[in-house]
Length: 119
Length: 272
Image (tube, rainbow over all chains, first blue to last red; front, side, top):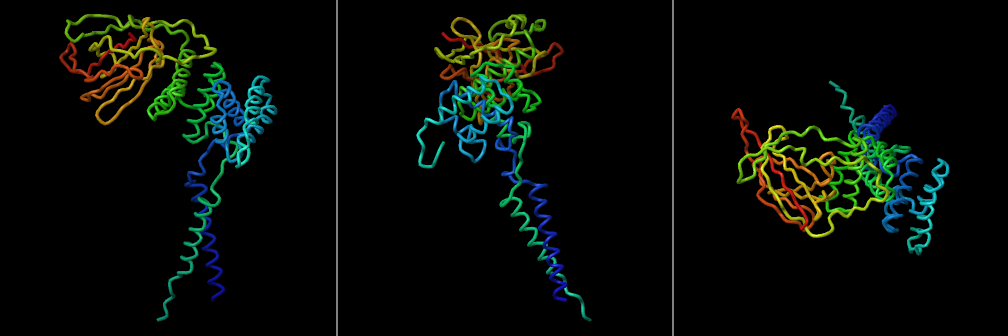
C-alpha cells in the first residue's frame, strides 16, 4: 500500500510540476520573458548596432554609445560591436555602414580599460 | 465502518509540483525569446528602437532608410507613433534633442506620404475677435503650401533659439466645421517664418501636456493644435521661457439654428 501511495504521489507531483511550467512558460510568462532587444535576430541586431554607430558619428559620445550597445544583452559593448560587424559583413551591409561601425569600434578600443574589464 | 481516508498525499504532490513548476518557469528558467524581429519587441524595447531610428535620421538624413526601419516595428500609424513618443519623451523630461528628432522624422514622413500637399479649399471660418464684430476669413489664408519634399541631408534642429516667443494674437474661433474645443497655435520667428518643432506646453489644474509645432505641414510648419476639455482653464507656453498665456477656456458658441457647441481659440506667438 505504501509503494502504491508513493507512486501516486510522484505522479501527482509530476502533474503539478507540468501545470506550473505551463503557467510560467505558456499562459503567464514573467516580465523577464518579455521580448527585449537582446532577442533580436542577427540581421536586426546588426542594424541596431549600425544605428548606434550612425548616432555616434554625430554625437561623438562613447558613453552613450556603450550604454546603447549594452541594451543588447549581458555581453560587453565592444563584443556586441564585434558581433555586429561580423553580422554586417555576413549580410552584405554597404561599405560606408561598415566604416561607421568600424569608427565606433576604434573609439571604444581607445577607452582605457576599467577595473571591471573592457567596456 | 472503515471509510477510506482522503488522499492528502495526492493533493500534497500536486501542490508541491505546482509550486516547483512555477518557481522554475518564472524565476529559475524563464522563457527566453530568440531570433525576434523588431515588431515583436515589448513596448519599452520598441520605444528604444524607435528612438534610435529618429536619432540616426538626424545623423544621416536618410528618410528612406528611416522609413524602412520604422516599418519593421509595424506601428499602425508611423507618424502618430513618432508624435506620441516625442510628447512622452518631452513630458518625461527627456532630451529635447531626442523629442525634436521624433518630431522632425514625423514631419518628414508626413511630407513624404502626402507629397506636396495642396490644402483643401479654404473652409469658411467664423472668427470672433474678442471685442470686434464677427468677420469672415478663410482658413486657406493660414495655409502655406510646402514645396515638393526634399530629404533633409543634415537636419539642424534649433527652432527655439533666439528670444522667447510672445503672444501676438488671441482670437476666439466659432466654427462648427472644425473639431470642438480646439486650441490652435501658430508660432513664428522674428522674420514671420513659421517655426517647426517648438514645444507648446498646456497646463491645467492637475495636469499638463506638451505638443509640438510642425506635425501638420499641410497647414504650416509652425502650426499645432490641442483639443481642450470644456470647462477646463488652460495656460499655454510656447517654447522654453516663452510668454505664458492663461485663462484659455473653450467658449460656448451658438449655431445658426440656435444650438450650442464648444468653440476654440487661435493663438499666434512670435519672437520679437
